[in-house]
Length: 405
Image (cartoon, rainbow, N blue to C red; front, side, top):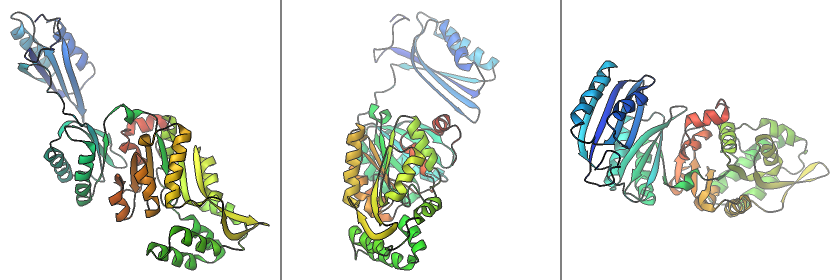
C-alpha cells in the first residue's frame, strides 16, 4: 500500500499516535506538521482537553519503506521538546465497526457521583452496548454528561436504565441517534407547576376567598374521587361573582419556573417552535404567550359576563385527553412529525401528552408520572431539558447571551 492510499483494507498497517500533557495553542497543528514529513494519511482523530490537560490521538497509515522508526523518533523528540509524552502503537486497520442500535444516553446529576457513573456504565455494558464516546454537556446548574452508545437499541436501554436512575437519584434520558436529533422540533409544555411555579386556580381562589374549598376539591381529584372535568367545574364554580379585574393581579403574581426564560429563548433561537397546553385558563396563558413569544397556547377559558366570573368555563375543555389532542394539532400546524415533538409536564393529567410525544419529560413529577414518562428531570431548573436534547451549556450561552432567569 502506498502512503497516499487510505487504510480501507482491514489488514492494512496503521499507527496510533497518542500525545498527552499540558495543553497549549498549536499542539494539533504541530503534531500533524510533524507527521506530514512522512507522507502518512489521517484515518481518525480524537482530542480531549480536561482541566488544561490534552489527550490527542491520531490514527494514521504506516509510512512507506523503512521510515516508521524515523517517524517514531521524530514524534517523540517533538513531544519531549514541549514537555509532552508520546505513545505510538502499531496495529492494523481502522477502529472496529460500531454496533447497530445507536443511542445517546444523557445523565443529569446534582451532583453526579463516581458511584452512579460506574453503575450506569456497567448497566450499558450489561445490555451488550458499547460506550463509544463520553462528553460533558454542562456543569451548571447540574452536571450533564452524554454517552454515545452503540450495539443496544434505545428502547431496551431506556427500560433498563430507568430503574437504575431512580435507585441512584439521577436523571437519565435515552434517545435514538440520527439526523432527526438536530432537526426542527416542537416543544410543548404544561403550565401549572411546570412552566410556572404556581397553580393558577389557587391564585384566583385566594382572591375569591375560597382557597380552602378549592384545595379540598383538588385533593378529592387527586384521590380519584373526581375526574379532571368534574374537578375543574367544581373549582371554577367557586369563583362565581369574582370581579374580572383580578386577572391583572393574578398575571402579576405568576412566577416563572427557574430556567423557563432560558429554555424558551434558546429553543426559539435554535429554530424550534414552543407551545403550552394547560388545564388552567386562557386569561393567564394568553399573557404568557405574548410575554414569552410562544408559538402556540391553549387552555380553558373562564366565562365573564358584565365584568364578573360566572363560575363556568366556555369552549373546548383541556383535560388529559385534550392535551394529547392539542399536541397533535400543534405538530400538524408546525409541520413537525410527532416523533420530533417533546412534551414536558408534572401531573397525571399530562400523561397522555407525554406518551404521545416523541420524547416525554416528567418535570419534578409524582412517582406515577415519572415511571410512565420516557424520562424525568428532578431538579428545579426547567432549562436542564435542553441537555436532554443534546444542547450543551456553551450552546445555550451562545444562543441566549447569558443563560440566567
